[in-house]
Image (tube, rainbow, N blue to C red; front, side, top):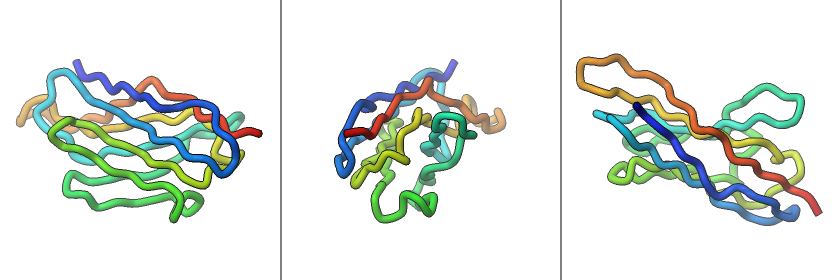
Length: 121
């Protein structure tokens, strides 16, 4: 079974920074895209940023220039550096990874349990 475990959420003042981490573990043959999504109060889950296995990135317009996604393939980990946080960034942040368990299996998407980020003075 594959598990994604996030860490790094918390309470931060407007203008502050946080770094989220997510590590994948379990029976993993390969990981292609990894990403971060968020779900604010009363809102649908939305994409924040994604990164391919070779480092190509994609960001939601609302976080461009403030957030940076990165990954460490050897550690099967993905990170989200969040700077210039504002109250609109308050949400539960979820890690996602597209995983093949064996070379013959199709890719499947897996989700972490989520980590709360609250931006408030």
